[in-house]
Image 1 (cartoon, rainbow, N blue to C red):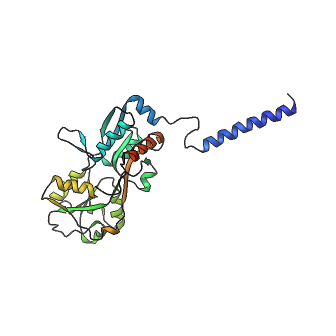
Image 2 (tube, rainbow, N blue to C red):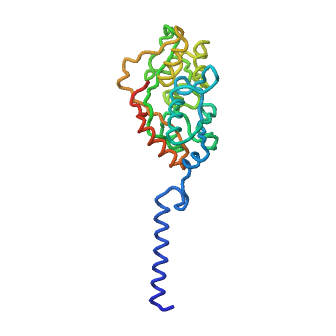
Image 3 (cartoon, rainbow, N blue to C red):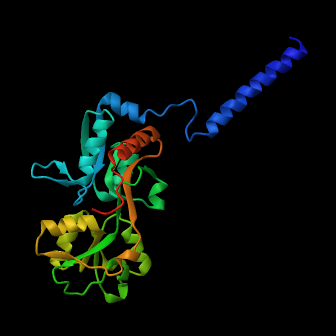
Length: 266
């Protein structure tokens, strides 16, 4: 081979190497691997949806079947994506992300507030709901529990919180001791803590608290917050594994088409 042809061959080979490096750098996975997270589910015809019992978002009806805001949306999105059946997999709230990462299901129901810590572990859909934290107390508020922004550990209050919820860190940062926090596995157990006097209040998102109050008329009430206009809205979305980009993109497209991106709590 002549020197001229050798040089051309080496330049051609170098070009291929640079092209491969460029493609690999543009994707978090190898460039020759395709993301089949959506097509795989479509071929199987089954979407596995993980949920934890939660008033308003995902509860069980009289037949023991999942029901609620998130359940209705998941059924509609799955149908729009061409998936015939949804398989509902119940877990605890604290296990929603770990079980997703362990491939126990494909999507986490609309139950997680988007936080920087969670966004490092999972990929959220476009925000599907905006909420604020609220405080639920026994009817009449006998301990004069204040609104969420004014909860003070020096008051000696015991607060029921959802196990694994971001509110735990926030209340600890304010100075609440471990003894002042009563951990609840789901909404009804938090309500039971308030009913039994083990906790003076339950802190959750306002939509779920309203559903608990609706389910127990005359027993509980939501603490009115006169300064609610100054409280930030918290975004909630469906959660996916970071590598399941195709499934997330398809899900986001359907949510936008259906107008399921809400700007207010319901």
